[in-house]
Image (cartoon, rainbow, N blue to C red; front, side):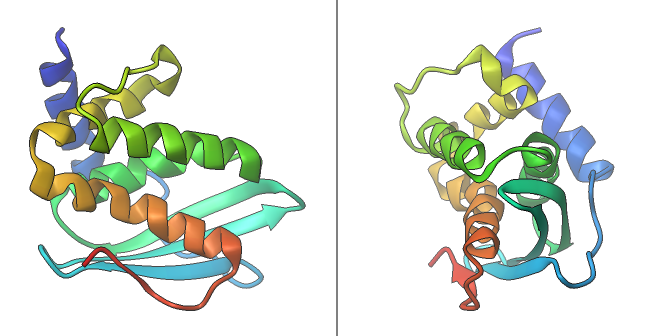
Amino acid sequence: MDLKDLYRDVILDHNKTPRHRGTLPPPARVAQGHNPLCGDQLTVYALMDGDILKEVRFEGSGCAISVASASLMTEAVKGKSQAEIAHLFKAIHDLLTRADAPIPASLGKLAALSGVREFPARVKCASLCWHTLNQALAGADAPITTE
């Protein structure tokens, strides 16, 4: 299976059956994100145990790439430290925004997001959840927008 097939299959699977969809009650941290370009709206809930992301959920509506990216993200970050999440965020940001960025094998299913970089207008769809998670982890109240 080549990367384009993987991209299509993973995006379709995670859009059709998103993982970790729903809410978390307080004391979960909450952040909201919005992509006005295609109407994606997302809320991310993050429950911390010290420096470790104990539980993460998302809810909202959006395009297939936005929903799939949020689902993939929640699978990848649960149980990780804030430093590990920051490292993963940088790897995903590079993957989405740099055509020459390597695709580390350590990304696993997240590597499927590399297909988004062929469609520059969709990068914001795939990155919205990551920026929103960063906002939740920082404990900031201001909504994220990808304008």
